[in-house]
Image (cartoon, rainbow, N blue to C red; front, side):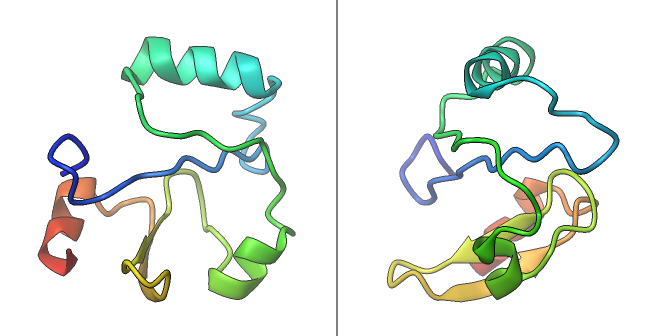
Length: 91
């Protein structure tokens, strides 16, 4: 869906879950690119106390997903056990 322009994923790394994101933003970007071949935007590492999470829901673990429409309104939050392909029914 990203490759055809239907969605724009944005990674929001945190180090709040088992210290899985200990690096700085450059190290995290390099790791994502090497391990997952990520080509979408990765924002600076943040903490789960950030206003984004207060507003749209605190993640329960890594790889939570938030789906917004073109007007930037939240459609739904998905837990980490939901595969990205399952979200396509909401797009």
